[in-house]
Length: 484
Image 1 (cartoon, rainbow, N blue to C red):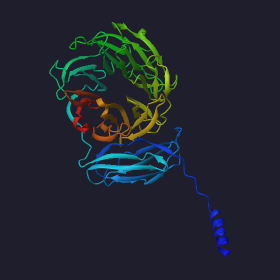
Image 2 (spheres, rainbow, N blue to C red; image 1 turned 135 degrees about the vertical axis):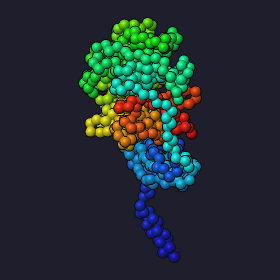
Image 3 (tube, rainbow, N blue to C red; image 1 turned 90 degrees about the vertical axis):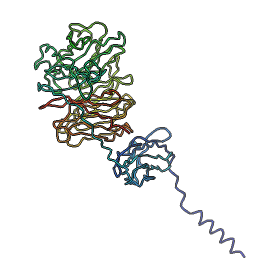
């Protein structure tokens, strides 16, 4: 009768000597970063899905286990399991199922909330829809066709030493259209003592909202130069009040530097210009413009410093001025003072070319150097003052991505590529702005230097510049390419 209590006591002691329970990992919070709502043909591997894990203080959590599982559509996702990196991020790639329709996948983080579900659409037809060439116009082989500015149904074709050609492509002044451009006039600008000739590179037709005038066309002259060292060329001011008889009336010069691409704050009547080794300038273009207008330069900056500046392009967006420097990368500037707000020294592998900014996302092109090709588009987070790289997309078998632009409504990203068998025109869906997906492309021998997007009579066109030895304006209809 005395043994039973002793046995019970013994069992209690043994039970009390077991291994203590392991404390669970602390709660974390999960957000979707990129990759949602992509569209591609069946059985296609998509751009990566990405999530980010942070603790309750907003600090990234590394080493947290993530499980990836397909939910709908019969696709496969790899890896099936992983851990977050030092930024608290994890990625996986979904290969769409064999049947058209909705695909989805789930990311589940240990002690994480919420679960993230990514969706994608598999189409039965091949998504790559070729842009349609609707017109081509030859340009004299005085180097060739460099850029086009399109506004109000007029195309200003910058044709180097052949000057600027003005074509009616839907304005009505000559009965032209994108399918049948009609010449309105031509002007060869002055050389202003710059070696090499007029070298008409780019243009901007100024619509002044203060005076309601559409009087002035600004033209960039790209003279001889050496990347990172020297450049030459002025901004030429042309009166186009009479489109049939444009007249050069003034110029802007920066000693020891040459003009490249422009942008305008038309409401403030300010012209921003990339000036290669001269940096970025801001010019007051209010009132009457005639003669030497260099005294109208109200601000100038070399973001990378005297020996680390070679500005390719500028763009005003969201109250900030963005600049791409071939040497020192993507910069953010104050549009009023040109003071540097952030960025720079962020692309060490190649020269940076053109840029486009929409919302909190920026896109830049590349120019090969430093033993690296420039055949890539870089996507950036510009929500803060320091641009943060998100993704890099390579264009196979090309050497340069010289121009990038986004269609109205942020539907598609358009890029032009040069050099190699893959040179040509590339159009990407921006269903997810930070994970562009190729929609259509066309290869062009020798490549396309620039692409200007214009919507005319409800259709979307890209006005491209084909390079020597047979330079021409090529107009592509991409309406079908970017359609849902």
